Amino acid sequence: MSYKIAVVGDQETVTGFALAGATYVHIHATREETLAKLSEFFASGEIGLVLITHRIAEELGLDFRWMSRAKRLLPLVLRIPDKTGYVPKVDELREIIRRTVGAGIMVRKEGS
Image 1 (spheres, one colour):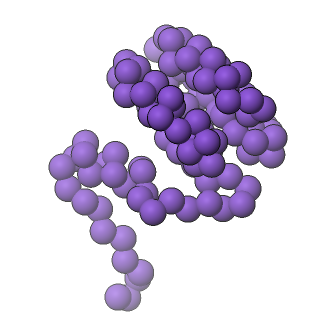
Image 2 (image 1 turned 60 degrees about the vertical axis):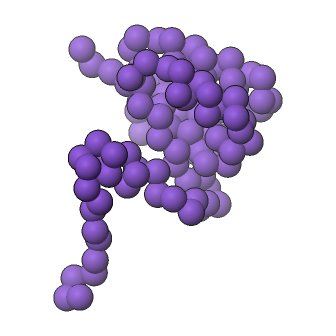
Image 3 (image 1 turned 180 degrees about the vertical axis):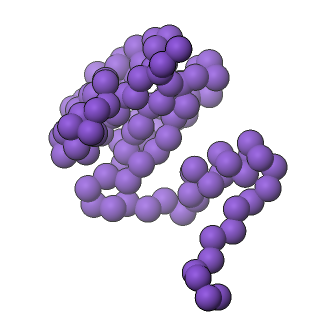
């Protein structure tokens, strides 16, 4: 089965991913509307990856975290930076890999 990608974010982020081929997109306007759309994405059997900007995930707070934990194995939820380049304290993708593989991945500059 081929899974689809869903993106939740600001206008510019969502537009960029839609142009790149994301199947499902949602432009964040209100908290309630975005939580309802995320619930649809999580219930869909054809979505394998949900990309959401860090700022919106933080704005949704505990409701988003509870939804993410209560969902099935798929879709995988990954927070991404938005147009402002927001970088969280913890690299979520690195943390997912560490939990899955059981080891950390070290990145170093060439020649170091």
